[in-house]
Every structure is written in structure tokens, then in C-alpha cells.
Length: 171
Image 1 (cartoon, rainbow, N blue to C red):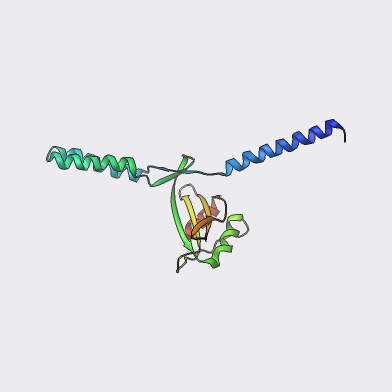
Image 2 (image 1 turned 120 degrees about the vertical axis):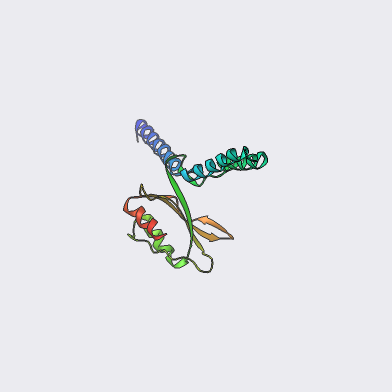
């Protein structure tokens, strides 16, 4: 093989490996906790109640206002993918081992409807789902219980439209 062809093949394989590494890095999804409207409204009501009570009873007013500030800082019930986009709700379900194959097929696109049955004796399979009903979007990951810990059985799978709606309705 001539030298220029070897160089071209080598450069091509480096480009492919480089693109593959970028693809793997973009598949990592981080969900960040964020405030929801409900969190903000509850902590604001507690804070304003403390300010109002300050004029009647200074000690109690300060205590309740401090509780409102603490709620504002700590209480974050929503999630966002990489801190951006729609606010998602998280749910986890322990499932029976018999429905594992159906869920794996559904997440990989082979099956059209998942069969989800809750595990009675403490599930050996768990599914975590981050979803938003209004936008019909969901992110799901399946875990297996092995060596006293849940280990990922699948990657985080993004579901949109009807597929997301089917999974959300099953939960």
C-alpha cells in the first residue's frame, strides 16, 4: 500500500475514534435539582408569614421567617437535564423480575408497550424515570440489584411523544 493511502486510513481512523469519544461524552446525562413553582410558593408563604408575625411576636416571627429562608435554600423538588430545559419529576419503582425483559425491549425500541408489575418482596429490578407529562418527554434507566446495591442495567434512554406517554401512564 502506498504511503499516502496508509496516512489517509490512519487519519480516518483517528477521526472516527475522536467522533466516537464525543458521542460517548454526550450520552452522559446529569439531572440537576431545581426549584419548582410549588417549592417557591410554599417557601415564600412561610417567609411572608414570618415577616407578618414579626409585628405581633418578634421571636416567633423571626423563627418562622428563618424557616422560610431555609426552605427556599434547601427545598428543590424538580429536576432538569443538565440544568436546562423543562422541569422534570422523578419516580422510582421496584419491579418484579418477570417484567425485566419487557422493559428492556421497550427501552431498546423492540416492544411497543411495557409490562410493568410492582415487586412485592422487594424488587430485584428498579426503574428510575424523569418525566414531564405536558411535554411528553421521559428519561428512563433500568437497574439490577446485585451484591447489595443497584447497578445500571441500561443507559439513560430518552423517550419522546407516544412512547414517553405509554411509560408515564404505566407508572
